[in-house]
Amino acid sequence: NAGVTQTPKFQVLKTGQSMTLQCAQDMNHNSMYWYRQDPGMGLRLIYYSASEGTTDKGEVPNGYNVSRLNKREFSLRLESAAPSQTSVYFCASSAGAGRQETQYFGPGTRLLVL
Amino acid sequence: AQTVTQSQPEMSVQEAETVTLSCTYDTSESDYYLFWYKQPPSRQMILVIRQEAYKQQNATENRFSVNFQKAAKSFSLKISDSQLGDAAMYFCAYLAPGGGADGLTFGKGTHLIIQP
Image 1 (cartoon, rainbow over the protein chains, first blue to last red):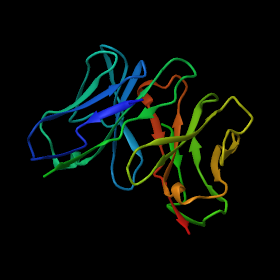
Image 2: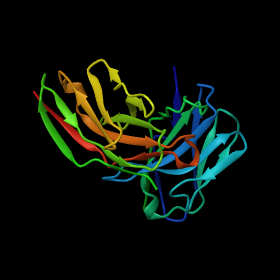
Image 3: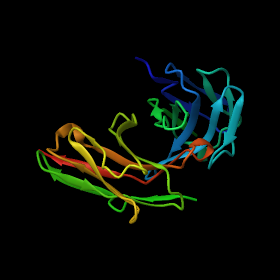
């Protein structure tokens, strides 16, 4: 069972470069999330998608865009990377229906912006 | 905004002993969810245990159990018979009713060390 998958696992960017982080889930979940984790902190929500075609900003959305391509896939784009975006990025999904709110996480993408 | 506080940055326990990790949270809601996630060195976030606030009974998953004190807004994790594989960061997390754009609110984590 693949669950939630993320690509790439690790990426180095130069300031100003752009890139897209990919996430896919095979659990037929409705809701998908992007979080970032910085040293000494828990995860913080960047964007959320309740269903295909809908997205909402989370706690730290500045500098990011997202696309919910279909039910399975939710991508995160950095248009012009900054050193402050050096972090570990996690994608998560949940059934998103009533009590089925448990979020399941991908393995993370470690991003270094120089 | 909800806040989650884990007051123990690091805990150490001897293998086979019991350890309790503390978590407190702040909310004005009456119905919500609480979680403990484990993050080993691989960085994978692994669900350990989940508690619905409307349930008075404390959740249990094998060697892992919680002490949920709703009035005190406390949600501690007890690990019995600690094993070397339990060594990890442990995060307490809160989810508001309806989930959604609030996402999970995480504490800063507790680093659990298992002494052989």
